[in-house]
Image (cartoon, rainbow, N blue to C red; front, side):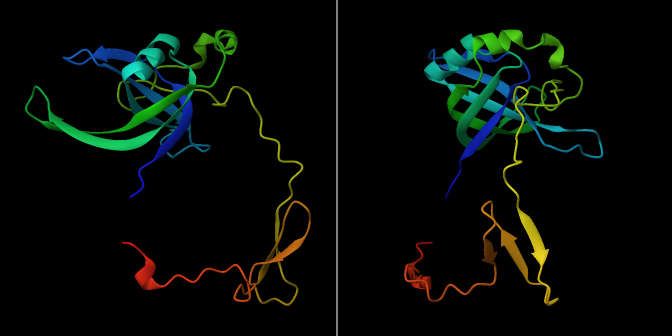
Length: 190
């Protein structure tokens, strides 16, 4: 089974460093990820709770703060506990194997501090309110031109033009491919 999560986003609050009973460091934080669209209820970001342990937890708490642009690599974990009112609480979070700091100290200090507002909530009444989550970088795809056309014979077959303007037939039969690999049902391990 595959359980891998890779995210890039901004912290919605300062990371919270705690220690377990035996002194192991654990840091929790929430990442805001830009969806690229706005839902009917006005949400334009997802808020993902993350946890990191040991030395990485200490470094994250020391060098990151609200608004920091970070990349995380880890896995999705679920857990549950009973709160003080006797209710069972279910939590899904990213267990981070690594946290990468994606902006320099100078870039972080140059960013206006008012860019991130506490307005709506996911978990801790924290919000992310920024039009461009990646530090004013713009994606420029002007040198790429991908075009889908209908064939002139009205058979609804489509062709694809790649960046070099070579036509690729999407209905091509690959049976004569010398590098084809034959997979039998009994070869699959699960």
